[in-house]
Length: 329
Ligand SMILES: Nc1ncnc2c1ncn2[C@@H]1O[C@H](COP(=O)(O)OP(=O)(O)OP(=O)(O)O)[C@@H](O)[C@H]1O
Ligand SMILES: [Mg+2]
Image (cartoon, protein in one colour):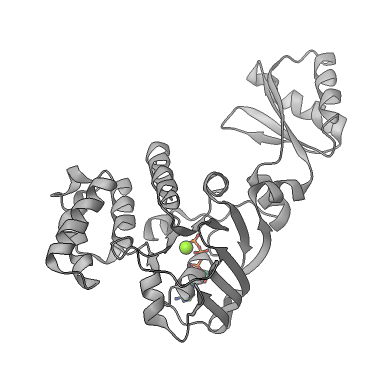
């Protein structure tokens, strides 16, 4: 691993600004990432996540603010920064006709490894990322999950102490996503520091020790997942009715008892109601019983990060997702 200078802060950035013409894509963001942690930057499409990472990785010039990586100034020492940071998101630029092995070998050579070292490193990484069967397959035949893993493998060739993962699982199926999460956890166990962006609240919840929520170029909240959930202050009553056709009537009962509109959760076929006081759950359950509505399940939970996001920004984390952009990213 490239030796990281001796400081506890992997990233220290203050007042980062990026403008495109009159538009302030990143509008004064402060970030501190500690050595050995997974720090999540959470935000919807266009929030400024990628732009922030690119500035920190010296791939885009900063228009304002200060940043250092392990104490090395990003503006003054771009060459050193590139040795300290592994950036994913580069697979799009490689030749689709190359095989998995050739691609990693080439990345190794481009990073200054000898041919023999490149060969050994490519072999190790293919094995570590479960890509041995993709060794001799051309990239154009790779699945989305294989591409992500190859991309992550390529970013690790120089063994950087800090890894930037820009939406590592967007577009992956749940199983492949779980594999990617395991891989990221392995990296952490081996002592890497990870700065991760995601639009998925559950991903930030699963992986990140601390999270910054950004929206429209501004950091709107920061803390551990639990702190963010607690800051919203309310619990949630999650209900599922025995008869799905009773759901509409249950919504009306909840509205009457709590004076708040519950949220339908189509995935689980139920509804969620915010509770300012967890004891109000009993009032709802009694009212449902009195209305002759039968409950399949009822749980009281701390707020999800989705609800936190909604409370902080006034809109959902997955608003404005444009499927075309998903593919283009
Ligand atoms: N090169 C550019 N020229 C002009 N505008 C840009 C450029 N790059 C990004 N932007 C704009 O800056 C804003 C932030 O973009 P950015 O890619 O950082 O968002 P993001 O949070 O990574 O979103 P996503 O989740 O969709 O990846 C967006 O409004 C985007 O359109
Ligand atoms: Mg992005």
